[in-house]
Image 1: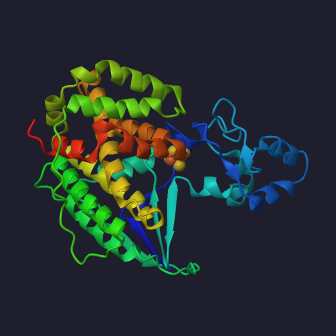
Image 2 (image 1 turned 60 degrees about the horizontal axis):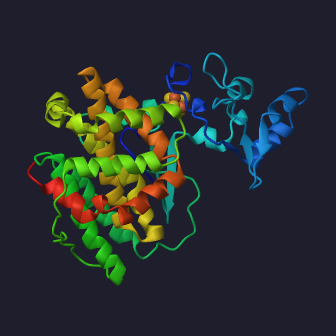
Image 3 (image 1 turned 180 degrees about the vertical axis):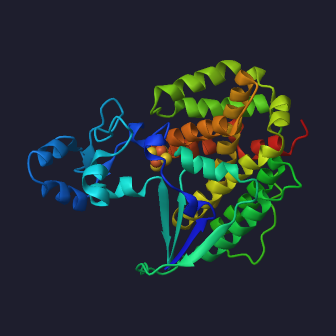
Length: 361
Ligand code: SF4
C-alpha cells in the first residue's frame, strides 16, 4: 500500500514524561478496543480488577476509560503510562497507541500525519521555515479493496494546486488564502454539476465589504458557542472577547516578521488533513472555507497573546495552536458547528471572507 505523510511525520516522538500538556490530561473519551479489553480480561487478579475497574461501558456499548477530573487513571505521577510500564505496547489500546497520529484511507493508499493538538506535533508542524513537503513510500500492509471514488483524482489534483498556492511566498498569506477559496468555489460548482473539468478557473464571485472587526467577532462568537472541553479555553475566549477591538495587527505582523510561514504551515496542515475527505461528502469548498476561518482564529488568538506579552515565542505559538486544535479539531460536534456557521453566519460568507482577504486595509 502507498503511504503519504508530511515530511515531519517520521521525526515525531512522544515527549512522554517531559510533555507539558499530556494528552492523558485532556479529559477526552478514550475508547478501548475489544482486543485490548480481552488482554486486560486475561490478566491475573488483582491487577485485572484494578484495570477493569477504571473502564466502563457507555450508552453505545463502547468501553471507555473513566478519567478522574480529566486525567487518565493510568497516568503516573511522572507523566508515564502505567499500562505501558507494566505490559509494554500490548497494554496500550489502539487509540492511545495511534495518538496523535491520524490516518485516512483511500483506495490503494493511506495518508497519515500527526495532529496539532499534541505539543510535539505542533512544534514539528510550525518550526521548519521551509515549505512543507510530503513523502510517499510503499508498505506491505493490506490494500483496501475499494473502487476509487469518481471524485478522487480531481480532488488529488486540486489539492496539489492548493498546496502550491498556499506556498507562493511572494504573495501575502491573506491573498493566498483568498485564491484557494476562489479555486474551491469553482471546484464546488463543478462537483455540484457533476463535471470533471480539465482546468479550473478561479471563481469571479465579487467580494463583499467586511471589516476585520466584524469577521473576527463572528469567528470568535462561533467558537464561544462550541462545546468547551477545558475551562482554560473558556477563559482564553472570554479574554479575547474583551480585547478584540484593541488588537494591534500591524504590531503583531511586524513582530511575527519572517515567521508568517507558521500560518502557511497551519493552512497546509489543515488542507492535507481535511481536503480529501470531500471524496466522501462532496464538499471540497467547506474544507477550504473552514481552513481560512481556522487560520484566522489561530492568528487572532496569537495576536492577543503577543499583545499581552509583547512577545510571541515559538513556545507561545505552540501553546496557542495546541489548545485551539484540541478544542475544535478533536470534537466532531465542534467541527460540525463550524461547518454550519459557514453556511448560516452572514459575516463568514465566502464573499465576505474574499472581500476581507482581498481588501487593502
Ligand atoms: S501530547 Fe503528544 S508529546 Fe504529549 S504525551 Fe501526548 S502524544 Fe506525547
